[in-house]
Image 1 (cartoon, rainbow over the protein chains, first blue to last red):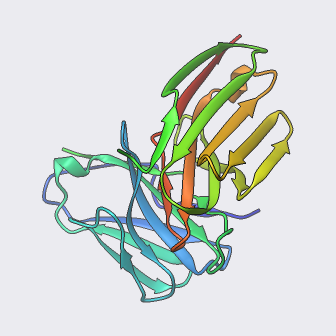
Image 2 (cartoon, rainbow over the protein chains, first blue to last red):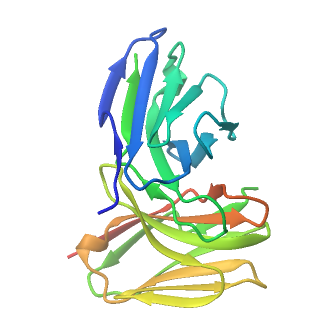
Length: 114
Length: 109
């Protein structure tokens, strides 16, 4: 059974804290993605990675960074959390290449920044 | 205007009703995805389409490439179908997805 896991389902942090969100997939997928989901806005891409140590900015990278040191793990980092980063964060992975590769999603992390 | 527009935003139905959710997009695409998100957040892929029609159980997805439009149909709806249904398109230029805002479906017993 394919699986994408995220380190926390719920997280509460204070403004200014450094926050790490971890995502692990066991499908040997090359591509990994971080999204945030907000009411009325749908899912928006923050960053994605198509290989170890490779990353590309998505549509809303400001205030975030990422790390991909191992193929199975993709971390999202909030260097200094702010209240406007309160959101649902979803990780996904897919095989590289072709236009018909399904993305598999993790369960999501609901982050609240106070 | 969003690249992917879904309608309706909210839909309430009685158990057994036939349901249609629509998705229109404005860019050239290589594939369109329909996703389901239950309360709690997890998203699962229902269909991936590049042409024609696909069926899985009570779910049917169609796409008209010329009209840039897709529909998701649910026959004999059931309360367990209550979820957010999301349309997403993969452009011809890459592997990224662009998502619609989602349709909240509630099926009452």
